[in-house]
Length: 117
View 1: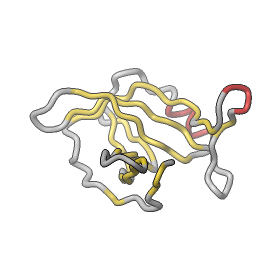
View 2 (view 1 turned 90 degrees about the vertical axis):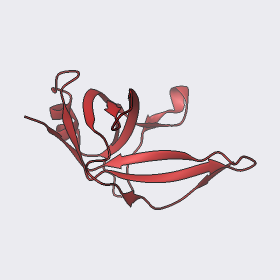
View 3 (view 1 turned 135 degrees about the vertical axis):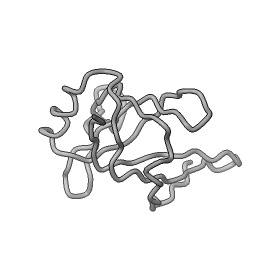
View 4 (view 1 turned 180 degrees about the vertical axis):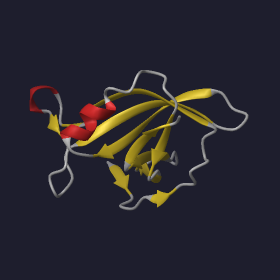
């Protein structure tokens, strides 16, 4: 059983020293043939954005972010070359943990991406 917290808290824009775009893919619900693209309550498609992130003084790590956006926006993001430096717009984090464990995991949402020039 998963315990989910229904809120996301905004994070500071400078939480990461650097963010580099890797990929955007459909966020799915279900498994195998039963899987379908996840959507918001309003029907907006959800996407998973993968990026290399680096904290001040740390090593680069791969992180994923959920983006709710129309197909056209996802197609535009998909044209960004791999490893391009980007800014995560509207970055927010929420936490969840499985019952019977004390481990907390974080999930991240964004409202958009901007290429850093």
